[in-house]
Length: 378
Image 1 (cartoon, helix red, strand yellow):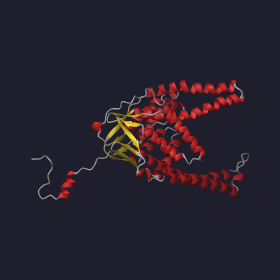
Image 2 (cartoon, helix red, strand yellow; image 1 turned 180 degrees about the vertical axis):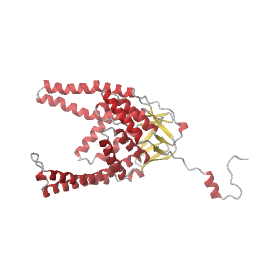
Image 3 (cartoon, one colour; image 1 turned 180 degrees about the horizontal axis):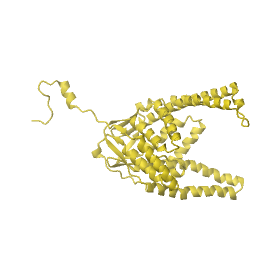
Image 4 (cartoon, one colour; image 1 turned 135 degrees about the vertical axis):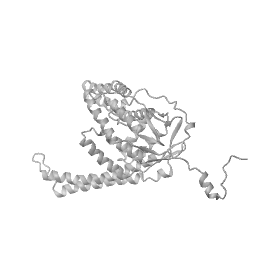
């Protein structure tokens, strides 16, 4: 006798195969966050920031992340954020006294004590180093976020060199400036590769591969349209201002309110047209990076569209303006939610074989990024 499944009496081979063959499971990703909950977190964070001279923002940010992570489910299982407000606060204090205070003191000291040439010789290297430190801060913030994120009890992690990422980001930034922005898409993809190739879920490492699906995304076509289209639209708008005489009526001493009205009325459609080009490129580069990710037997994809970017940009802007900034967390949640709900995961992970991460987690939060005003709530 054998334990293998056998076709039922009279059952065709095709029906037997369809009944006994299981498709490889996927992990559905979905975020169910609600606007009201995020507006409430933003509201009481705003009030307590006034009372505590903005110190409560570290705890408010932590509450926001815990709620957002818990509302994000992969295969029915929620993410968990384990960071603490005290970690963010201590990281910020350390960054202030180890970087910001010495930097400001060095700049003011050079201005007060040195001659013009010596002052420039001191200040320029400091500013160049700060550009490198921006990349370092981004890396360290990401490392903290991943180290405080768990899924099914398994912790994420980030390895690699913070300074290596900082110098790479600085170098790519210089190349982007020298090429008038044309190196920017390549820079973004290379930096994403550097980050994701050193990201881990437990003992399993992420891979960043130039898959066929990823390479189908028109990264440079969308960038070229945004770059060329932006210049053409802006040039046409300026040309219309000059030829129509509107520019000549912009007298700061005796303002012509009719001309000012025409200026803004013509600028809005021009800006929206440029925004369409930029939104397409942003959606394309997001899909390109997402489709390059692999985690063991799991593949990633994204359906983020140009309309998603335009709609979110306009509505989030209005949300922040009309709530006087209180709706910032709600706006960030809406972006996260759209990204998550447009993402598709295919394949499967053998969770039983994944070991807990052994990567050492940082003890403080994203203080350096916070000190440089780079950090967002997620």
